[in-house]
Length: 417
Image (cartoon, rainbow, N blue to C red):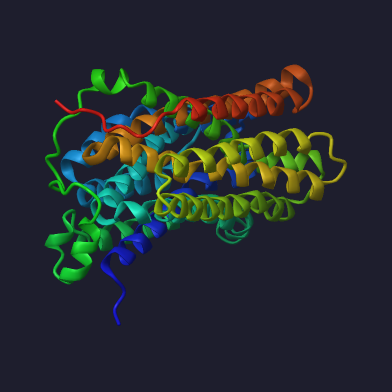
């Protein structure tokens, strides 16, 4: 019996999210040879990491609007091709300025990936399945990052960091080509979908065209209190998680005196915990939704997640050995990633046919948090002489995010023009 077409959409977006984070985190694991070759300080490398996040944040809302208007087929094929090009071009960086520009453009190229996935989920996945699907999507990103931590150093040792980046570029080109040939924005237009599956996909949601959805003026969207609460809590979640993508590898390596590849294996553990957090949260979101607790299905997993993140960050401080520190950091990332499925499910509910625009705007705010982390950690370390200030700040932001979710009322559709 063939797999349902929507299951294949989930597989394709799983692979997309996996590749997204392989390409995103590869620069962190390649820090040693890049810094040595280009003669960079830790602060300069932090700015290069931050440049990616600023580029990524800047184009979130425009790319989400493009996904809503153009459809997920075109926007995701274009985006994967664009970010793959800039992954390869990273190998051509010759100094700090060139690396800064390339990584900014790389972030801009990646910007529409998750809003595009959100638009594909709205078109292909019925509401009662969306929590787990978003959990699967985000678990794939964590698995991609986790695999990269130990394996990319091995690849770099065998091929060099430049050839490794070019190889990753080629893999992205393959995904984009297959997606363009197979995917359709409107499930009804897919040549192999069954009538029964099409009816299931359309159950429980308003059917709208895959493109040409009614406009949602930016002013109206930004007057929504729910929108601002989602942006604030996502800022906090990204502030915690992006540390894991950028500075965790060098942090554990230096703090606990680990070898290069050994640090990679320890750095992958919190990311694996994040993947588990996404699956657990996605399951809980859908279970509560099917039980008739639609509002609670978004709030409760997020509140639990932010509480775990705050505890894990605080308890990781002062641990005498790397195993204990990584265990508590794994709890923090498990918790931080529990917040993703409810956040994106909430935005898909809120935005409806403009899910890409609404989720992209939330993701823009989140990635401003990412950008700040990339530069805040090295500077706070330099100014205070230890990681305590950074971890206390991240834990406090997680507590503020709980307050945001307590204030987020039942999902009300945003009125379009």
